[in-house]
Image (tube, rainbow, N blue to C red; front, side):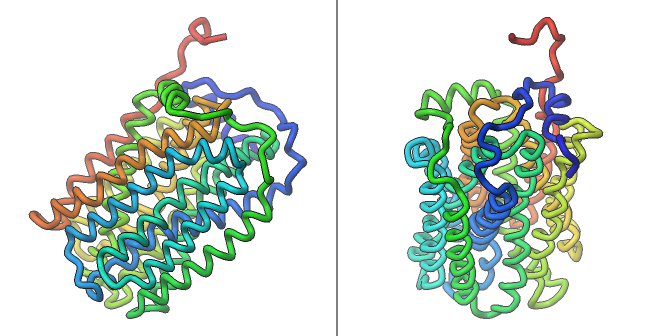
Length: 409
């Protein structure tokens, strides 16, 4: 990613950005240690703790004799805990600092996945998914804030992009692990938990104990104020992204396993392709140097819609769908993060939390609704319905820049 794509993105988003400059804390941490541990902790929290459920769902469904309705309800409950953690994270970060907040999130991932490994029915599996589901909301905002505070201005965009791509790396790792553990989803969950433990230890050793600057005491009023600055377009886009992603992540592997273009390994290969292509999606910030955020958002949203249609209407093309989905979804998340940071540069952690809350609402609603629709009309209907929702994200682009005389001082 070339130097300065975030600044370029700010020029093209049509929103006011932060003043460029070098953070006074830029030399207090090792940049690539911070970025590397951020990538790793996001990989295990998002790629394993959250998306591991969808990856291992076909095996668990058979072993624990679960219905599509139960699977959707459990998936929704996991995203419900993600929503709750989104609300709690700003206060934890403000009062306890990034190191403790990430420790709590990493511990939730380890404990939750161990409970999933020992699950004997829908109740215990649900408990594990709920505990693990809280971890992503607790580990990402501290790194957003740490990058803004501790990295020089010309490194921040690259730092955000690499850390955000951790989800793709996690999913890419999860796929082969699930293949190696075919027939033993408990082994896969245990392996995920072990990786989460090691990564959490690394993150704790890398992050500063307390931030010299935080977004300040954060309550509901602060979140509402930031949400107003972000506006309906950004929050609507993140909500729709969550709605589509919750459905795809929960039931996409189920479709791939049912169609089985590669036999028994289809589910693992499907998830691996989602992750590998997502790594490319994490590089989308580099394109902001040559094109606008609104054009990139429209292109990636169209690609996301196409991935849903291929999953629903083109048997045998589920692996193509996986490639398109991985690249487009990770790219969309990166673009929404850049958009949020440009709107509220003074409070990056609170800004990303409000966007995450909107996405979490979509994630909570998506899986149970998709489970109900699938039970009545089949999974193909679910993904046909997801396609126009995904395409709409591209229409919710940042407003064009106002004339200079209209800009606030």
